[in-house]
Image (tube, rainbow, N blue to C red):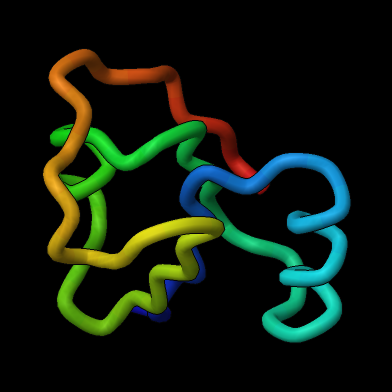
Length: 67
């Protein structure tokens, strides 16, 4: 399985800047929630607009987008 790139919480100019560095994401998570955390595999790369992996996930899940 090929590792995927996940963007979490990006909007507007932040997104464009992240794409310049990391390339287009495979998945876009509107925010950090339990669903996003479940869908990330051990070898995937996760890029956060704010915060990090250890932040508390939101209580409600958002629909994810494919990049």
